[in-house]
Length: 161
Image (tube, rainbow, N blue to C red; front, side, top):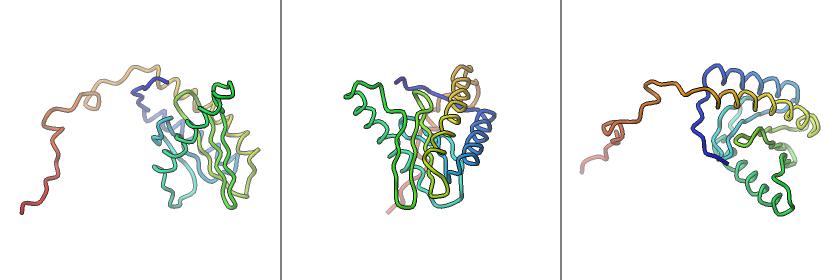
């Protein structure tokens, strides 16, 4: 897998959020997180509750990576879907493309079949948006400029004793 310096522009983020919203509505899942394979959260939608998105994103990416190694032992490229069933909540993790993963959290209000069906559709749609994003030239401007030596100096200074 290549490491890319991807920039998701505002219009692409809006399209991704619209797809995530539609996915949640159609599947009745509670939360949807789009993460990259390193565990960085790219986008999310869902009910407002305290969810440690940083930890769950990192752990889901790690679980997906480890099952990829198991798949290779069986002669598969990777397993494209993971499912973790809990008593109250379950997690469905699926491939979007070679660099992104869709994670859905759901409860008894829906079934894994519904989540899987609509996750497949959402993954294709998000994958198309990400493919477009990767082909666009990077914008030149203040955010594309490397930091100066002055900007890299820490702004926090320890208290003097």
